[in-house]
Length: 252
Ligand SMILES: [Zn+2]
Image 1 (spheres, rainbow, N blue to C red):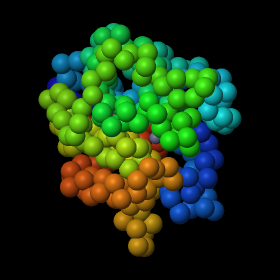
Image 2: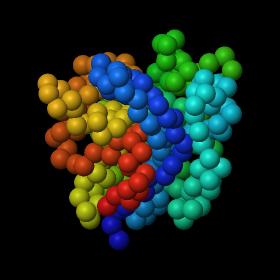
Image 3: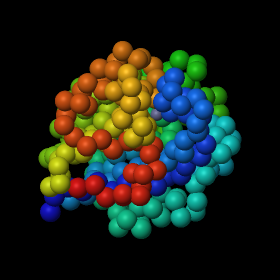
Image 4: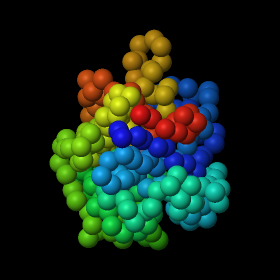
């Protein structure tokens, strides 16, 4: 059996200002963003890419996301059970980056190693002030990854994590953002993390911009180099926050 990617829901925020999703574009629009985590099945062990969001009350209080919604049916343990995934059998978690909406709940995976780019882990410990909430490094909360620090393995650069699963650095949104390239029987797919928020980011503006960065970034020069890296992969891009990804659900 070949590898398959399953997109799993972790909540949503509706009506996000367009220029927050596509930098300097769509200021007159709003977009809905889905929070997600992904399971890669069909290998020796299940691999997770990102681990979702925390409790909605915590999110509203700590992050000020007053419009964040996560239904009871979207609690991570239920979502995993519904997909037939036993968290105890997850051997590897790969973090695209350490923003709170991608890396909450690590303690649900007691037997996993947690793979993150070294630059990302370092930055998450002491982000510039404007990004402290995004990394949940505040006076009243701490980065979720700290609860599993003994299971963390840092990597630097591109690395094969398991047969058919490769971590590919895509810095720009954050210093150590990375994508996960997955080779399936139906072709290659790239879990792009927040380098590509929605399909609109990858499709560009139809005029002068082939691709559009997110409105949230640390380095635009790195970001555009990451777009070039993605082009060269020849893989189908799976955005990190597009609700259409959940509609399709299975890739590969
Ligand atoms: Zn992010």
